Length: 358
Image 1 (cartoon, rainbow, N blue to C red):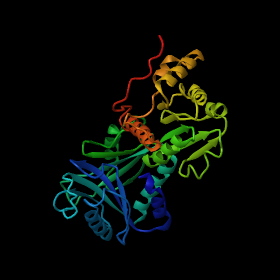
Image 2: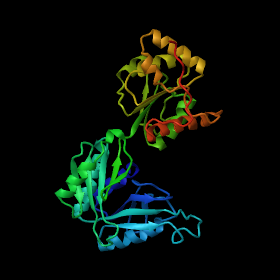
Image 3: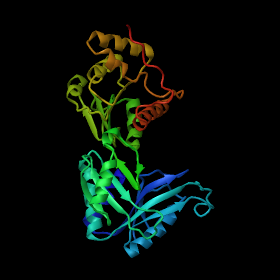
Image 4: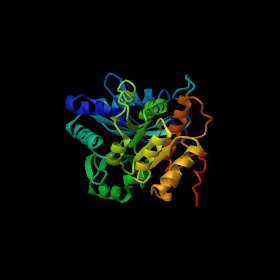
């Protein structure tokens, strides 16, 4: 949804009509999973995607009918012969999609509140109540902030529905995926993880360019201002030039922060890890050979960094895919970051950590 924030804000400011489509539930093989969002405009154009050729044309036809009638509904789409046969895109599953016209003051107010949470909050949860067996039922949509406080609603639901939804809300700190409970669909949008890359060389640049498209907010740090220029890092949120001994101690690190140490040398790596190993980051990764990592860990133990903190460092860095080129190394690193983020710390094929001295 975050990629549509500008379009959503424009809807509130311009008064333009559109249809807000949200993938609520899937079963079987589908091109997208719950939480995918698409906006459909009266001329048939769109922003965002629900998965491409399998189903989007039919969603548009349904959405434009709902726009004309100013009627929200949950529509069910079976991905079989009816959609995509000519293109060979038969997925076989089914999708239930919230189709919500944005026309009147109530629906526009809801989108306005959603935009505020997108811009200012670490996350929120949309809760959708519907009965797929009742075609004419109008769904109710509830919007809860990260503190599980109701901020906006659309539809006929009342306080009883709000209380029922509150019973099943999962704290966003656990980064929950979309889930279903007692006839309610929960679509959490969790805080984007910050990725701090220490080192703006070839690998740092390649990882950065890939990670921004994987929904990480990237900060890159290097003592060479020319290395972290806007030309080399056009998409990152923040570029910081200076001595890492001065920058890292004051850098904000949260339980959602990923730290990647890919500097140009052993000494720089060691200095960076000294300041990041025990700061409470969600992930700290260090590039290099096992021998180099062992030497750095030994020195940091002598410098007072705890064995427990070093045992949590992911090193050597990256999933083993036989990487040789810079681009391949970046793929292996980003695959590790995504797996760790999306699978609660699990990384497939992860080798054992460096064995520290007893």
